[in-house]
Amino acid sequence: MNPAPSADTFPRLLAHHASTRPRATAIREKDLGIWQSWTWQQMHQEVSEIAAGLLQAGLKRGQHLAIIGENRPRLYFTMTAVQCLGAIPVPMYEDAAAAEMAFVFDNAEIHFAVVEDQEQVDKVLEIREKVPHLQQIFYDDARGLRHYQQPGLQSYEALRAGGQQLLKQQPTAIEEEIKKGRGTDVGAMFYTSGTTGNAKGVVLGYDNLIAAGRAGAEMEALSSNEEVLAYLPMAWIGQNIFSYTQWLVCGFTVNCPESAATVTADMREIGPTYYFAPPRVLEALLTQVMIRMEDASAIKRRMFHYFMGV
Image (cartoon, rainbow, N blue to C red; front, side, top):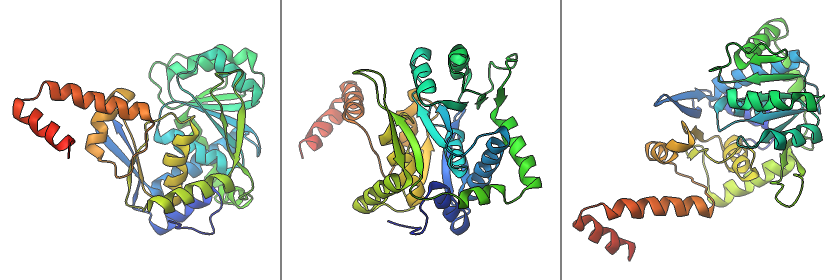
């Protein structure tokens, strides 16, 4: 499926969906047990505001920005906002130790970081003196951070408010930046696991990522009607192909679970039509089903084993 043949960058794909399907749901997040939704138009507006905020903060074309946290709409918005400016997002594993993060921050010369919560803020602050390129840290979830007064630490909302002010003065600022982008530009940078040595940065361009996304979408006959659950680490390239690249290529709806502990329950509520999982995840699901069947009634167990053999 190829809804926007001329769109050769992710910001242009987003603009395409916002203009052609403004009221369609782009992304959902479960918060306190309730699903919150953003339309493509709302997402486009928020991405523009965050991009403007980062522009005002000093993020320059070609610089790197770290994104650390679980699957959250605002972190996905940040990825696209960074790409609007021609800068390069570097998603990182949220469970990485501070020392592991220090290597990536130094190696990639990270200038800015957008993180999910207090846990990630604490880790970045711990390594701050070791990474001289780092200028500012922005956080999404403010819980536990009220009394943090470190210089260069701001909330996502403050970043967005700054962007809104800039757009009032320069309404076309982000559109002009997007026009400078090319399919041959670097779209994102991912780091290997580092199990056999230091992690290595892998640079991927828009042409590469979008071609992979379109090929997968055509092979699976994906449409804009799909429901997809984004539950794997943002730092993993597989997650980015299936829940970011194909999302922007096809225009389907991505759903972010409330937490890692609620993935199975949230999946039942969403009923994803397109589901990607490594073998370990599928094995864990099978184990859960088998354990529950041990406690089921005799007739349910007989029916279960009968239909498993069909």
